[in-house]
Amino acid sequence: MLLRTFFIAMSLLITALSPPALYATEIAPALQSISNEMRALLTVPVSKKFKSELDKQYLLEFYKPREFNPGWVDLNGPLPRAEVLRQVLQIADQDGLVVKAYHPDLILSLWNERSPTLLARLELLLSDAFFRYSVHLRAGQYQENDFHWDIEPPIVDPVAELRHLLSVNSFQAALHDFIPKHPGYLRLRAALKTYRKIVQKGGWPIIPSGPFLKPGGWHKQVALLRQRLMAEGDLELGPLKNVHFFDNTVKFAVERFQVRHGLKMDGIVGPDTRAAMNVAVNKRIKQIQFNMERWRWLPKRLGQRYIMVNTAGFNLSVVENGDVQLAMGIITGTPERPSPVISSKLHTIVINPYWTLPPTIIFEDMLPRQQRDPTFFESKKIRVFSNGKELDSTRIDWSKVKKGHFPYILRQDPGPKNSLGRIKFLFSNVYSVALHDTPSKRLFNQNSRALSSGCIRVKRPIQLASYLLGEENDWTEEKIRAAIKSDEYLKLPIPETIPIYLVYMTSWVEENMGVHFRPDIYNRDPKGAECN
Image 1 (cartoon, rainbow, N blue to C red):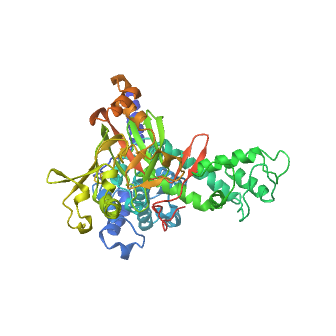
Image 2 (image 1 turned 120 degrees about the horizontal axis):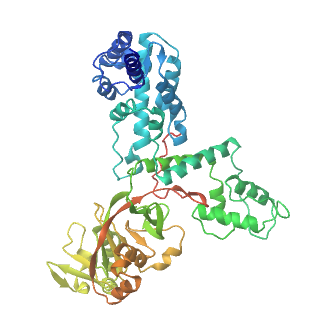
Image 3 (image 1 turned 30 degrees about the vertical axis):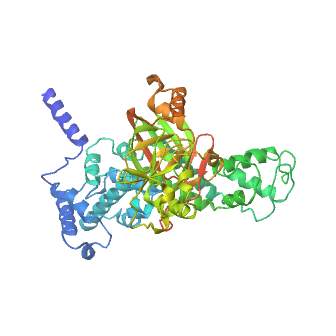
């Protein structure tokens, strides 16, 4: 008898602790009134029965298989999981999301209601808020085309996500797992919190127009400069002598600020540095939020080993097992010919490449110069072919050549003057862009390097090639230099293709260096997008 009683008690306990069935075939009589109201709200025009803008398609897809059985409420009001969801939605701004997108006022107004009609409305609002939140947090809250983003965003099925969440024991932990785990995202998330605290403290001071502020000098604006540098943590020490004296601690702090903003690191506050310092903190917060959004558009897993190219930051990083193995500066497309945002797999390295000129460069850059100087192509070692035969470029009447009729192929031979330099890195994409070397090494001395026609020029191509080909395969830097010296065309598949991401991040965080900001050179940060 005692054993039978024990099994009955355990059965009741397991039933009480078990999550509800995903597809309920029967509804408890006490919940039938709520279910009936939910059915009515979803099967008649929403505008007549419910003024809120709900995603009727998702709601019907979720509730029809479960016979409109509620998952967030019963006749006693919201269930514990509903309170967890409401609290999470209230702090969605921590991820740069717009809290009011998740019906906070309507949900609050219905929270203490107990009539079946109003509980049905609360149930649908909570599900709709969850659908929006799960999509926004995992795949972004804006259309990726608004950012000129051609990397396919993650696919999220919010209905399946909700079914899963209602089946797990730890609802709160499962909901927290929605937050992207990319280190770059999490660092920006922490930075967002820091910069909001700066706002709470009153922001940072504006430094009025004035003379150059230089190390060793005295000026009343240096006191303001100190406050400005302390606001973001660039300056931590107080003045050694006088607040108006530009000492070395201020110099080092200014240099740190300049590095974070992609400016010339000279420790002098001139017009460019002053302008960057006077950007409002709220604008920087939006910049952080926009780039958190860009992280949400990247795949959940980038790969054990991958190449990240940030065209806004003019930098390339090779990452392996979460650590940067190789980093270098790059040159990107001009604002008129911007580098695209794409993902692909790098598969081949070409040493001593030929360069077949694309139409845009032919008609906008090269042809006008050849028309002015008939020896221009010859001086650049650009050869002209038609129907498989090479022609003498000095004997062609280039003034009669037009864009609609161009029966020629222009090709530059390998060599020190080749516009692709000595090494080219190939990956499939519809834009025909590539990574490559450049003969114009001096351009890497510039801080802003939006100078190419869309392709990515890399500063250290030999080191990158050696890493990708593998020194263990005997492709040392010395061997690559010897291959270059031979001037022979050499096409080398890399042993293992590697994912490559060309992204556009105008803000990111570096450990021990704080938050970096860059100008929106391609005008891709949305101007009208709303952020919290």
